[in-house]
Image (cartoon, rainbow, N blue to C red):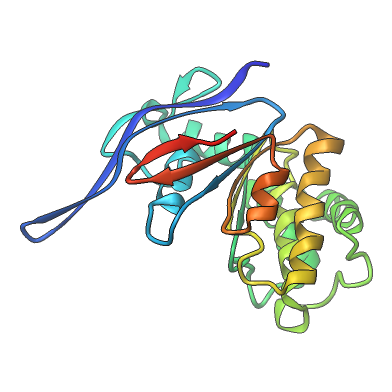
Length: 226
């Protein structure tokens, strides 16, 4: 199985006056195509920082991140935008839905930004909402949806461009146990049914154990526990 993404000696530091906080201290990670990789660790360990660097949302202080062999930090703005719009999907703990938009409009958003005709975008959006079990909630705004339903909308939006790689940052962290299990099953099903590569940051040990590989971030470095 080939690697879709590689991190080499990734380090991230933040300066606060005279103090320097070293969050990542030389992280090496290989993400294999079509796998589910779980990353866990204590609060404040830098898990979200690492995920943002892996997904091009942030830059490392030093180190290299390669997507399909190309170094992300060397891509120009047009190439980065294409990567985020076509190859990578994002799912966050707090959904990041547009409150004024309906469920279908939130799912369509990536296409509308790219100038896709609304009729075509809506057809694809309906298919995705149906795939996450929300075909009856298309006109509802986020405030009219439960937390689990909002996360399903966010997942549908992340899948709009049929990305090869989806990053999920604590996707069940804001949900009750029953709803969390449903979101976990949905994400694992995407990997199984669509061969979507999935990288998940999670505190949920059951979710982590269901992944193909489970790594812990300890002291700013990776401990792979199998």
